[in-house]
Image (cartoon, rainbow, N blue to C red):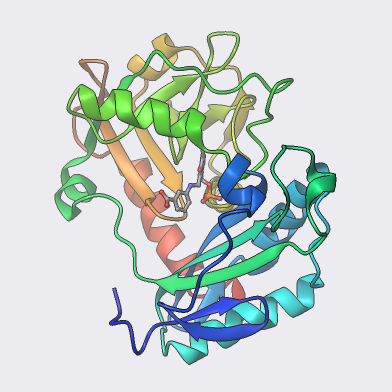
Length: 293
Ligand code: PXG
């Protein structure tokens, strides 16, 4: 974390210090979790897959009927300006668009029509380095992913309690990540990452009940480019337990191998060759595909 004087945060068109970066307690993002967000990374002065992140942010906002008062192009400029103001070449970028200030009551019409836009740039490390080398152990938790007809997991909304409850259950059992099943009992994803298995050299990932992860999308593209088969399909825990390899994907986590699930050893119990290959391909892609600044 940068010290207070140097850290600059984008708040509604201005770059302000950490202490000045404040919004009202009447903001419906705070009161009701009403808003959208994105977590993005930059590598060596390139914002990775920024257009894809913009599309997802604006798609979430569209479903929430939240009019973002910036075009995608203006938002990209605001992100780049914030990165430059903080002199960060490798960063974690958190974009938040909340419904804005309003009277009490969950009706968005009670807001004065000015969403708050916040961009924070900083560093993030999600899991200890050792887990990347040895692979991580995860469990399945009781909290299922939201039923898509209640709150679609494809929305990256400010309401993340579904995932946080699952994270708490994982933590309570001594784990830092967990599998969440979907409303039909199929494997959906983890609390902040997508899940991929490898069987007979081919990749498989759940087809429903999950966020459309941009890291996962990159992995699927890279697989296609390397003639590695990949399918989006219904997956049960049995298929995860009996996979040759397993790994998780996410902007914050990047690609992390999984070697044990619910006490079952996956494959050899060590990060496998296909996982290693995807990590290598992914690292190379992060330096190529995005917006330079
Ligand atoms: N599923 C869920 C539920 C997520 O929240 C992913 C999958 C991976 O998607 P991307 O597009 O990032 O490949 C996410 C993303 C954090 C943090 O602060 C979490 C995410 C991203 C950035 C930061 O814990 N999760």
